[in-house]
Length: 291
Image (cartoon, rainbow, N blue to C red; front, side, top):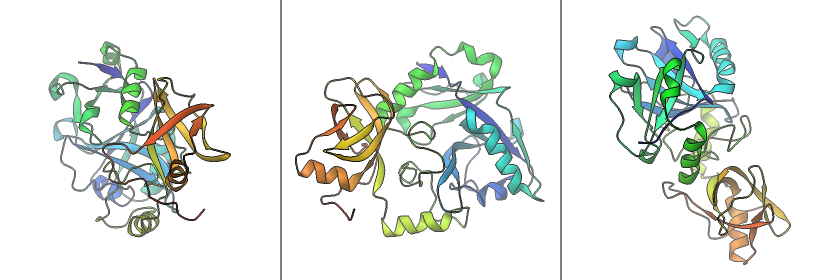
């Protein structure tokens, strides 16, 4: 059973009698309908609808105090805690950054362990193939066999993006990061920060830029951050890469134009193919939209 300590992840704890309503009015996921011990992908957006932070939000079980725990990038955890504090106002909510005391681990390829063995354990809500994750005491984290790189190689193979690695915070809309495909946006819940823009993109179908998979026939991917080029036109950029695959942000219409015209796509002078991840519901357009 492969598992890894995700040393690049941090932990925030949100508690208090107003915690549910507080988060429900801020983030993209429906946390009010979240069962104890379950998680959802979610994000906090700018008022203009772009992703400031992405995270997995978990409703804690009552035996560990209830509330919500956020599995978030370690580098941005303090900033997210501060941002949530700005929104708190008079709400009866406590926001704690527990990243030094509580670590995040992940396992895949087998069933999850019992919660009483490892702490707060939950299935990854994005894809079953991503396995399970858990919050454990930091002192216990070294007992997990692989480093974070093994997990990210697995994630890259599946084509599942992560903020800060595959798209820049403050620049991407949830649709562009495929959050709508991975259960990270609830279109039936009430208002949250940036909701109006996100709903408009959903109803108008205006997301032309998407996360896709890049496959390199030679079996070795170009370096992360490489521009994807069709002829003399830049159409995207590589994110996480490993082996012969990478996660890529691509203008779908421009990629479709190039493929229809027989123009090869390259990154770092290496030819590649782009594919819609098998879990996604969108498709490559048959013809390009306006430039």
